[in-house]
Length: 237
Image 1 (cartoon, helix red, strand yellow):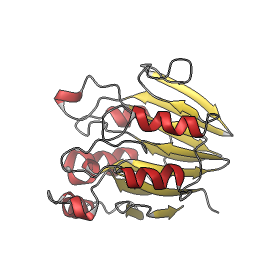
Image 2: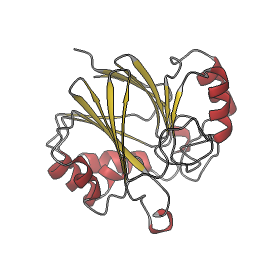
Image 3: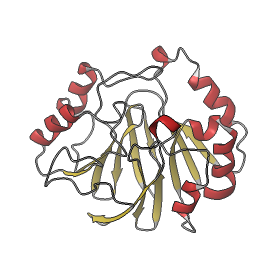
């Protein structure tokens, strides 16, 4: 049974085709940051105007760092698809967004159940940035995404609680760092794990792709583990 389809756009930007909904999560960002790739004008045109991925029913942002979110590109997408819903932890679109600096947030949309939790951003310099994890329940198939949650505490494990996670979509520090691997292996225990927020090959000067692959080799308890790291790469679960 097919539960969902994932398509990588760039970094942590993915399109989820899940049930009757298309979710663009952290897709629209255009400010290049060190070590990572960015949504170039050419890539943005393909995504918004090219029909390569399906139109969004929901635009979702875990937080508003420039490698996850662009207000300008979001305005452009909403102008094209005005019926799309928006979840964003910053008040850039008053009256449109559904999440604004709440500790917990529950949301139902097109047969999907969303549970958001505020999680501390990785790095002491960014701990004040509102960052949200989410568990999406699609008819009993649960998907976890943690944004840029810190890997140095059990905060994410507390958020997940006793929920069984069928698919965890996690940034590379969760496999490149021993603390992250331990939480994934011993606390979250997902059936399937997808690692993303990695640079494309041409931007991999810091070797993040190789470091993440080497760290992932230490995880042996997850039967299905994959990497999303090429533009428009797709996976079906």
